[in-house]
Structures are given as structure tokens and as C-alpha cells.
Length: 262
Ligand SMILES: CC(C)(COP(=O)(O)OP(=O)(O)OC[C@H]1O[C@@H](n2cnc3c(N)ncnc32)[C@H](O)[C@@H]1OP(=O)(O)O)[C@@H](O)C(=O)NCCC(=O)NCCS
Image 1 (tube, rainbow, N blue to C red):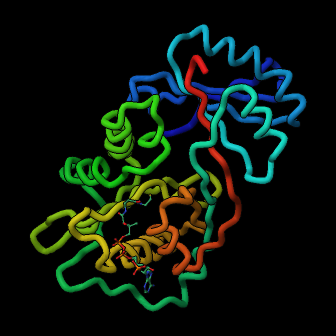
Image 2: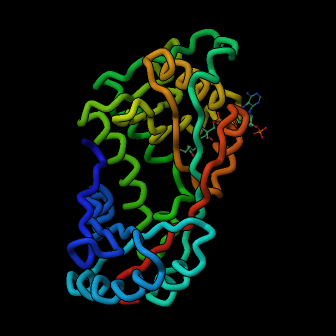
């Protein structure tokens, strides 16, 4: 499965931490990226964290990433004491797709068409993905080269094409790519709204809301039950689109980074 992490407990077996190398981010950023999940209570995490960070430090330059619910004060304190800093707040959002059943059909301006991407669309989609994101946690992280942070988004969609994931493109009557949407169905019939963007020259014209609504209708027609996603709190443009579409904001998270050597 694309984007599945090989998480290991620390200490093994059954420890309060789980960790994995994040292969796609490591490859794109040229820096080993490790995701840490805090699965136990704060005290247990505090006990297990030093030996895990020592193991990671022994591997050389890297970036450790952890996400905790916004209310998890004790856990945030433990991570902060170990050298982690908060870099991004985000929301988890979800919508049962049956709610779209009563929405009026989406009407794009004449000439615009939403269709499944073909391999011939990959370069245009990759170019949009590369320029669309500038304020995410990797572009804002001083330990990461911003060009590499852009490589990550380009790599994200190129991997989607290589893995045969669902990518939808919005094109005009000259087959110019206006926007794209990458989605990842999961086993339970739900679907992750993984990455989407409108090309810079076509933004702020109402196309985004139509693209998002049309993709949700298509996902409902294709039998998916619930759409979910995670969005950085600073990305107000897309948060407003999701709010207009009736998404519930189900959880708030803080993402923390610890560059090696801190
Ligand atoms: C997020 C993004 C796709 C939005 O697309 P867009 O075409 O620029 O969207 P627009 O600005 O035209 O539309 C949003 C506007 O429509 C409004 N809107 C949304 N749904 C609406 C609806 N159903 N009816 C009326 N207005 C609506 C919003 O409030 C907003 O209005 P405002 O800008 O006047 O406050 C685009 O900004 C983008 O590509 N951003 C970079 C990539 C990114 O962040 N992607 C999302 C994370 S995966």
C-alpha cells in the first residue's frame, strides 16, 4: 500500500513509542525523516524517549517528527524537554459523503472538464504541486532546504501516478491543466483527500470550491462512504472551502519537529 509506514515499538515489544523511517519524505528532502508516535501515557513516553532519540542521533543527520492532540499538555511538555518544537497546528476534517446526495450538481464554467488523469497528465500535475505549497511545515523548517521541500510535493504526485492511485484533473478546452486532486481510498470504504491544488493563475476565481465539490460527488458515486483529510491551520483558503462544503473539524493536532543535534 502506498504511504504505509513500517512502525516499530520502542522499546520492543509493546513500548509506549512507535517509530518509523518515512521513506518518501527522506528521499525527497535528502535528510532522514523519522515519525514518532506516542502511544502510551506521558510518563511512560518520558521514560522511553531518551534511548530512542539516542538511537536516532547515532544514525547521523535526521529530523524526528511527532504529532500530538492539542490538549495533550503533558505529552507536549515531555517532547519539548527532549528538544522538539511545535512547527504546525492542523485539523482533521471529515464528511459523510451521503450528505452530498442532496447538493445541486456541480456546474463548471463552459469548457472545463473533470476527468481521471492519464500518464500524459503527470508532468503538468507535478508542476502545479511543485509551486502550490510554500507554507507547510517543511518549507517553514530551517533544517530543510526549501527547494527540497518543493521536491517533496512534486514527488508526492509522481509517486501517486507510479503507484496507480486515483488522480483527477480539471482541464480546459485546450487541455490545459487547471487543477488536480489526489485521493487514497482506505480499506474501510473511506477515502483520504490526500493532495489537491489549483494552478496559481486560476486561483481566487471560485474554481477550487467547484473542483472540491465535484470530486466529492464523484467519490460518492464510486461508493466511498466518508471523506477525511488533515489540513494545516494556516491554510485558510482550503479550510474555508471545506467549511463551506460542510466538513466537521474533528480533531486539532500539533506537529513537532526535532532536528538532530538539538
Ligand atoms: C485551496 C485552493 C485549491 C482554493 O482554490 P481557489 O480556486 O483559489 O479557491 P477560491 O479562492 O476561488 O475559492 C475560495 C473562495 O470561495 C469561497 N467559497 C467556497 N465555497 C463556496 C461556495 N460553496 N459558495 C460560495 N463561495 C464559496 C471561499 O470562502 C473563498 O472566498 P474568499 O476567497 O472570497 O474568501 C487554492 O488556493 C490552492 O490551490 N492552494 C494551494 C494548494 C493548497 O493549499 N491545497 C490544499 C491543501 S491539500
